[in-house]
Length: 249
Ligand SMILES: Nc1ncnc2c1ncn2[C@@H]1O[C@H](COP(=O)(O)OP(=O)(O)O)[C@@H](O)[C@H]1O
Ligand SMILES: [Mg+2]
Image (cartoon, rainbow, N blue to C red; front, side, top):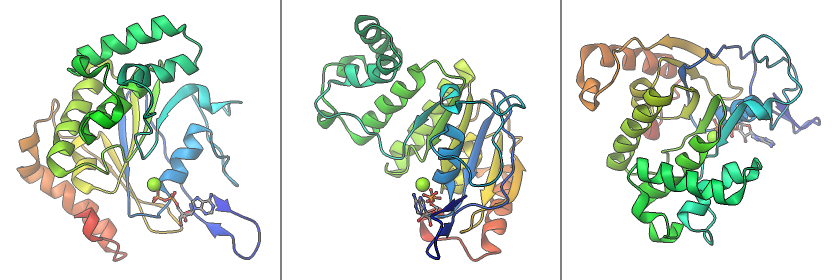
Protein backbone atom coordinates (compact mmCIF):
# COMPACT_ATOMS: atom_id res chain seq x y z
CA UNK A 1 0.00 0.00 0.00
CA UNK A 2 1.51 3.30 -1.09
CA UNK A 3 0.12 6.67 -0.06
CA UNK A 4 0.53 9.46 -2.60
CA UNK A 5 2.00 9.23 -6.07
CA UNK A 6 4.76 11.84 -6.22
CA UNK A 7 8.33 11.76 -4.84
CA UNK A 8 6.91 12.28 -1.36
CA UNK A 9 4.88 9.09 -1.50
CA UNK A 10 4.96 6.75 1.49
CA UNK A 11 5.19 3.03 1.06
CA UNK A 12 3.30 1.88 4.15
CA UNK A 13 2.81 -1.87 3.64
CA UNK A 14 4.52 -4.32 1.25
CA UNK A 15 4.40 -8.06 0.48
CA UNK A 16 1.76 -8.76 3.04
CA UNK A 17 -0.19 -11.96 2.65
CA UNK A 18 -2.28 -13.77 5.25
CA UNK A 19 -5.53 -15.61 5.79
CA UNK A 20 -8.02 -15.20 8.56
CA UNK A 21 -10.03 -18.29 9.36
CA UNK A 22 -13.67 -18.32 10.37
CA UNK A 23 -14.08 -17.78 14.15
CA UNK A 24 -10.39 -17.27 14.66
CA UNK A 25 -8.90 -14.68 17.01
CA UNK A 26 -6.00 -13.28 15.04
CA UNK A 27 -3.74 -10.47 16.19
CA UNK A 28 -1.30 -8.27 14.35
CA UNK A 29 1.46 -6.93 16.57
CA UNK A 30 4.09 -4.42 15.53
CA UNK A 31 5.69 -1.10 16.41
CA UNK A 32 3.95 2.24 15.88
CA UNK A 33 3.89 3.37 12.29
CA UNK A 34 4.48 -0.10 10.79
CA UNK A 35 1.18 -0.10 8.94
CA UNK A 36 -1.21 -1.98 11.25
CA UNK A 37 -4.04 0.51 10.91
CA UNK A 38 -3.46 0.66 7.17
CA UNK A 39 -3.92 -3.11 6.95
CA UNK A 40 -7.09 -2.93 9.01
CA UNK A 41 -8.43 -0.07 6.89
CA UNK A 42 -7.89 -2.23 3.82
CA UNK A 43 -9.64 -5.23 5.41
CA UNK A 44 -12.52 -2.98 6.45
CA UNK A 45 -12.93 -1.68 2.91
CA UNK A 46 -12.09 1.92 3.82
CA UNK A 47 -8.94 1.80 1.72
CA UNK A 48 -8.17 -0.01 -1.53
CA UNK A 49 -4.72 -1.60 -1.76
CA UNK A 50 -2.57 -0.02 -4.50
CA UNK A 51 -1.47 -3.54 -5.47
CA UNK A 52 -2.76 -6.93 -4.43
CA UNK A 53 -6.18 -8.23 -3.55
CA UNK A 54 -8.39 -8.91 -0.57
CA UNK A 55 -10.69 -11.90 -0.91
CA UNK A 56 -13.72 -12.91 1.13
CA UNK A 57 -14.44 -16.65 0.97
CA UNK A 58 -12.04 -16.83 -1.96
CA UNK A 59 -13.79 -14.14 -3.96
CA UNK A 60 -13.15 -10.51 -4.71
CA UNK A 61 -16.29 -8.85 -3.38
CA UNK A 62 -17.76 -5.54 -4.38
CA UNK A 63 -18.20 -4.02 -0.92
CA UNK A 64 -16.11 -5.43 1.91
CA UNK A 65 -17.68 -3.04 4.39
CA UNK A 66 -20.73 -5.21 4.87
CA UNK A 67 -18.76 -8.14 6.29
CA UNK A 68 -17.15 -6.50 9.25
CA UNK A 69 -17.57 -3.97 11.99
CA UNK A 70 -14.65 -1.75 12.86
CA UNK A 71 -13.65 -0.28 16.19
CA UNK A 72 -11.21 2.58 15.75
CA UNK A 73 -8.22 3.33 17.93
CA UNK A 74 -10.25 5.84 19.97
CA UNK A 75 -13.58 5.05 21.62
CA UNK A 76 -15.40 7.74 19.59
CA UNK A 77 -18.41 7.88 21.86
CA UNK A 78 -20.57 10.93 21.20
CA UNK A 79 -20.42 13.07 24.36
CA UNK A 80 -23.96 14.40 23.95
CA UNK A 81 -25.56 10.96 23.73
CA UNK A 82 -26.33 8.79 26.74
CA UNK A 83 -24.35 5.55 26.98
CA UNK A 84 -27.36 3.50 25.90
CA UNK A 85 -27.81 5.68 22.80
CA UNK A 86 -24.10 5.51 22.03
CA UNK A 87 -24.19 1.70 22.20
CA UNK A 88 -27.29 1.72 19.99
CA UNK A 89 -25.64 3.94 17.39
CA UNK A 90 -24.04 1.17 15.31
CA UNK A 91 -27.24 -0.75 14.67
CA UNK A 92 -29.20 2.49 14.32
CA UNK A 93 -26.97 3.44 11.40
CA UNK A 94 -27.63 -0.01 9.87
CA UNK A 95 -31.30 0.93 9.76
CA UNK A 96 -32.82 -0.81 12.80
CA UNK A 97 -35.76 1.16 14.26
CA UNK A 98 -34.69 3.44 17.11
CA UNK A 99 -36.80 1.84 19.86
CA UNK A 100 -35.55 -1.61 19.03
CA UNK A 101 -31.96 -0.33 19.02
CA UNK A 102 -32.36 1.17 22.48
CA UNK A 103 -33.79 -2.05 23.84
CA UNK A 104 -30.97 -4.13 22.40
CA UNK A 105 -28.40 -1.66 23.73
CA UNK A 106 -29.98 -1.75 27.19
CA UNK A 107 -29.90 -5.56 27.15
CA UNK A 108 -26.26 -5.84 26.20
CA UNK A 109 -25.31 -3.21 28.81
CA UNK A 110 -27.13 -5.22 31.48
CA UNK A 111 -25.64 -8.48 30.34
CA UNK A 112 -22.17 -7.05 30.79
CA UNK A 113 -22.79 -5.20 34.07
CA UNK A 114 -23.07 -1.67 32.74
CA UNK A 115 -26.87 -1.51 32.98
CA UNK A 116 -26.82 1.04 35.77
CA UNK A 117 -24.76 3.43 33.62
CA UNK A 118 -27.09 3.33 30.63
CA UNK A 119 -28.47 6.82 31.25
CA UNK A 120 -25.12 8.43 32.01
CA UNK A 121 -23.09 10.40 29.51
CA UNK A 122 -19.60 9.29 28.35
CA UNK A 123 -17.96 12.07 30.40
CA UNK A 124 -19.38 10.53 33.59
CA UNK A 125 -17.70 7.14 33.03
CA UNK A 126 -14.15 5.91 33.61
CA UNK A 127 -11.87 5.18 30.63
CA UNK A 128 -12.37 1.43 31.04
CA UNK A 129 -16.16 1.74 31.11
CA UNK A 130 -16.18 3.97 28.03
CA UNK A 131 -14.05 1.45 26.21
CA UNK A 132 -16.40 -1.35 27.22
CA UNK A 133 -19.34 0.68 25.95
CA UNK A 134 -17.55 1.28 22.64
CA UNK A 135 -16.83 -2.44 22.37
CA UNK A 136 -20.49 -3.23 23.07
CA UNK A 137 -21.54 -0.88 20.30
CA UNK A 138 -19.21 -2.84 18.03
CA UNK A 139 -20.40 -6.24 19.26
CA UNK A 140 -24.04 -5.33 18.79
CA UNK A 141 -23.54 -4.98 15.04
CA UNK A 142 -24.50 -8.31 13.48
CA UNK A 143 -21.35 -8.77 11.40
CA UNK A 144 -19.21 -11.89 11.15
CA UNK A 145 -15.88 -10.12 11.54
CA UNK A 146 -14.75 -7.75 14.28
CA UNK A 147 -11.85 -5.45 13.42
CA UNK A 148 -10.40 -3.96 16.60
CA UNK A 149 -7.62 -1.38 16.34
CA UNK A 150 -5.68 -1.13 19.62
CA UNK A 151 -8.93 -0.99 21.60
CA UNK A 152 -7.12 -1.06 24.96
CA UNK A 153 -4.14 1.08 23.99
CA UNK A 154 -5.11 4.05 26.14
CA UNK A 155 -5.97 2.13 29.31
CA UNK A 156 -3.85 1.63 32.42
CA UNK A 157 -2.36 -1.83 32.95
CA UNK A 158 -4.94 -3.12 35.44
CA UNK A 159 -7.99 -1.94 33.53
CA UNK A 160 -6.44 -3.34 30.41
CA UNK A 161 -5.94 -6.80 31.94
CA UNK A 162 -9.58 -6.82 33.02
CA UNK A 163 -10.73 -5.78 29.54
CA UNK A 164 -8.69 -8.51 27.88
CA UNK A 165 -10.36 -11.16 30.03
CA UNK A 166 -13.74 -9.64 29.38
CA UNK A 167 -13.19 -9.62 25.63
CA UNK A 168 -12.17 -13.29 25.68
CA UNK A 169 -15.30 -14.19 27.63
CA UNK A 170 -17.44 -12.36 25.11
CA UNK A 171 -15.61 -13.93 22.18
CA UNK A 172 -15.81 -17.42 23.68
CA UNK A 173 -19.56 -16.94 24.00
CA UNK A 174 -20.42 -15.77 20.49
CA UNK A 175 -17.37 -16.93 18.56
CA UNK A 176 -16.99 -14.41 15.81
CA UNK A 177 -13.88 -13.82 13.76
CA UNK A 178 -11.62 -11.18 15.31
CA UNK A 179 -8.73 -9.29 13.78
CA UNK A 180 -7.10 -7.46 16.66
CA UNK A 181 -4.30 -4.91 16.51
CA UNK A 182 -1.88 -4.11 19.29
CA UNK A 183 1.69 -3.06 19.94
CA UNK A 184 1.68 -5.08 23.19
CA UNK A 185 3.32 -8.51 22.83
CA UNK A 186 1.76 -10.07 25.93
CA UNK A 187 -1.68 -8.84 25.00
CA UNK A 188 -1.27 -10.40 21.55
CA UNK A 189 -0.29 -13.81 22.94
CA UNK A 190 -2.82 -13.83 25.76
CA UNK A 191 -5.76 -13.20 23.44
CA UNK A 192 -5.00 -14.95 20.20
CA UNK A 193 -5.14 -18.19 18.26
CA UNK A 194 -2.52 -16.78 15.92
CA UNK A 195 -0.18 -13.80 16.00
CA UNK A 196 1.33 -12.01 13.00
CA UNK A 197 4.37 -9.90 13.74
CA UNK A 198 4.83 -6.89 11.46
CA UNK A 199 8.16 -5.22 10.80
CA UNK A 200 8.72 -1.48 10.67
CA UNK A 201 7.88 0.59 7.61
CA UNK A 202 7.38 -0.55 4.99
CA UNK A 203 5.39 -3.05 7.02
CA UNK A 204 5.55 -6.71 6.16
CA UNK A 205 4.81 -9.97 8.02
CA UNK A 206 7.99 -11.07 9.80
CA UNK A 207 6.58 -14.00 11.71
CA UNK A 208 3.39 -15.97 11.92
CA UNK A 209 2.92 -17.82 15.18
CA UNK A 210 0.25 -20.31 16.30
CA UNK A 211 -0.70 -19.76 19.93
CA UNK A 212 -1.71 -23.21 21.12
CA UNK A 213 -2.28 -22.28 24.74
CA UNK A 214 -5.38 -23.92 26.26
CA UNK A 215 -8.65 -22.01 26.53
CA UNK A 216 -10.38 -20.62 28.48
CA UNK A 217 -7.28 -18.65 29.44
CA UNK A 218 -6.65 -17.30 32.90
CA UNK A 219 -4.49 -14.29 33.62
CA UNK A 220 -1.90 -16.47 35.42
CA UNK A 221 -1.07 -18.17 32.12
CA UNK A 222 1.43 -15.38 31.43
CA UNK A 223 3.86 -16.86 33.96
CA UNK A 224 3.91 -20.29 32.29
CA UNK A 225 7.01 -21.49 30.39
CA UNK A 226 4.92 -21.98 27.22
CA UNK A 227 3.76 -18.36 27.34
CA UNK A 228 7.28 -17.11 27.87
CA UNK A 229 8.62 -19.22 25.03
CA UNK A 230 6.06 -17.66 22.66
CA UNK A 231 6.94 -14.24 24.00
CA UNK A 232 10.63 -14.74 23.25
CA UNK A 233 9.83 -15.83 19.72
CA UNK A 234 7.85 -12.68 19.07
CA UNK A 235 10.47 -10.51 20.74
CA UNK A 236 13.22 -12.14 18.72
CA UNK A 237 11.41 -11.41 15.45
CA UNK A 238 11.01 -7.81 16.49
CA UNK A 239 14.48 -7.47 18.01
CA UNK A 240 16.11 -8.68 14.83
CA UNK A 241 15.32 -5.28 13.44
CA UNK A 242 16.00 -3.42 16.65
CA UNK A 243 12.37 -2.50 16.84
CA UNK A 244 11.42 -3.15 20.44
CA UNK A 245 10.45 0.13 21.98
CA UNK A 246 9.54 0.84 25.59
CA UNK A 247 5.86 0.72 24.76
CA UNK A 248 6.18 -2.87 23.51
CA UNK A 249 7.73 -4.29 26.68
N1 LIG B 1 -3.38 8.66 4.57
C1 LIG B 1 -2.07 8.58 4.69
N2 LIG B 1 -1.25 9.34 3.91
C2 LIG B 1 0.10 9.26 4.00
N3 LIG B 1 0.75 8.44 4.83
C3 LIG B 1 0.01 7.65 5.63
C4 LIG B 1 -1.43 7.69 5.61
N4 LIG B 1 -1.89 6.80 6.53
C5 LIG B 1 -0.79 6.25 7.08
N5 LIG B 1 0.34 6.75 6.55
C6 LIG B 1 1.72 6.36 6.90
O1 LIG B 1 1.82 4.97 6.76
C7 LIG B 1 2.57 4.41 7.81
C8 LIG B 1 1.75 3.38 8.54
O2 LIG B 1 0.71 4.01 9.28
P1 LIG B 1 -0.32 3.23 10.19
O3 LIG B 1 -0.96 2.17 9.38
O4 LIG B 1 -1.21 4.22 10.84
O5 LIG B 1 0.64 2.56 11.29
P2 LIG B 1 0.32 1.89 12.68
O6 LIG B 1 -1.16 1.72 12.80
O7 LIG B 1 1.05 0.58 12.67
O8 LIG B 1 0.87 2.78 13.74
C9 LIG B 1 2.99 5.55 8.70
O9 LIG B 1 4.30 5.92 8.34
C10 LIG B 1 2.01 6.65 8.36
O10 LIG B 1 2.59 7.91 8.54
MG1 LIG C 1 -2.51 2.43 14.23
